[in-house]
Length: 304
Image (tube, rainbow, N blue to C red; front, top):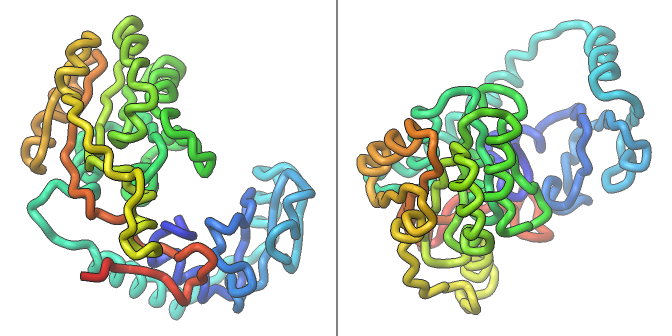
């Protein structure tokens, strides 16, 4: 993943590339950052089913309109194989630098939560998200081992999307489903727990509970001199009791050890479960390209 909250390695590699093959992308500003600065060294080949998307946001060297699978296969067959040791070494170094940036801690961080989910779930598990910081963390850290296993509203910003989507995904796929959500998003449509219980949907809800509207608060911290407005929730919701009131199972976790224990219990059942995970409100989604900024302005760590 690259762009505003993309991986450091992929974002930097994209900036260093001399050719980019873009398959079914829109080149939105969330993906490119400042468009006049985007991939300045690259010639771009854009493959898309919709002709209107080609050259709409980013000028390209070659535009190919057609069925994605067929066109991509024909392109791949036409290009001879090659090895590029220098490029491979660069990407390896960028990945190593990204891995070094992960802070080692005993606390229950978003990455630790998702690492545990990765370790305890099967490849067939569907991951659904709501909207906010947790959505970006899921995109960054979830280890998808099979296709079509992420259900998210993408850039549409639909807080409250997640629970209904998770229920639908579990019914439609017949697979265990994990919803990664936040306390703000979950509050939008938590009443759908009644539906989940009524139909016995095997959904495990993991709430990243930091007591704030995290993504907006992150912007207020970084770009508005910590002028916080309407982002500290000050709610007293007991999500464990709430889950039980709907007839679901409820759990609480504030350490990696307790989360591992309760997630195993929740995932092992065929009933809806809710896990309240207490997350530091000062956890940020990083790296980040500032709005209107470019790869030159990438933020990789919080200021003290």
